[in-house]
Image (cartoon, rainbow, N blue to C red; front, side):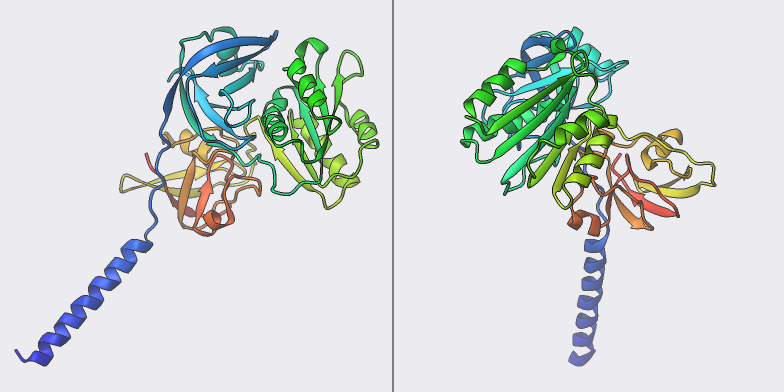
Length: 354
């Protein structure tokens, strides 16, 4: 065999190997399942008749306003709870019991020092922007918890901007960490102004009442809100109308509801363990719910598009997700989607870890 032929064969082999390597590197990789840590409860403090705060023995690097997923044991679902102190302070989470809430009921009625908790995180994009000149915060009930993390952080920074904080609760008895909030307001030397509204005094924080309170607020450069969905809807509508163009940040404390339409469904294909697993998604149904209905066990966490635990990677087609889902533009561009809040209008194939 002549040297020319040998060289040609070697070059051809190199080209083939390069092509194969390129294709392998471009193949979508399955997102890894989130690992859980174990925390030990160090103390439990009853804040209100329905709320407790608890400390743990862990240290975690998190941003003010973020949350973790936790569960007391494997028989209970994962639920999202925010830190209520600043990074660098002893870790504390504050939980309010919700009606029919298995995890919140356990935590507020049965949790004791020494108990173990499974924890994943931290997660969340409810974090302060780099530049704020004046802020408006709106919270309802346990929605105050991520704001407390912010306020402790801002206290440590010397209160760099003025804040008006509107806080709604059912009664004075149910005001979470009120004494701590009062102390922060006093330390701020006028930078923090808290406006408390309770159902038993002013009445519920209705659209009309909230609108009247906003009339007294100077134009902010940043608005943040967290609380029950009806309050959030009213706050968003009023704030964006009164302060057009202002940045608005929201934190959701409840899973996105499933809305199933009457129209025909579509077939999606799940790639898992090297197998193709087809299943039907009804119109308006979230992909995670449809996969469960078909008997497929997929990773999940908060189930409100805020933690990324259910992240999958598209191979073909598309899965539509809300704008506020916790994926960066770069991740979306790479084909990642969150199936807990994602829906599909056409055929799609995606990959997930078991």
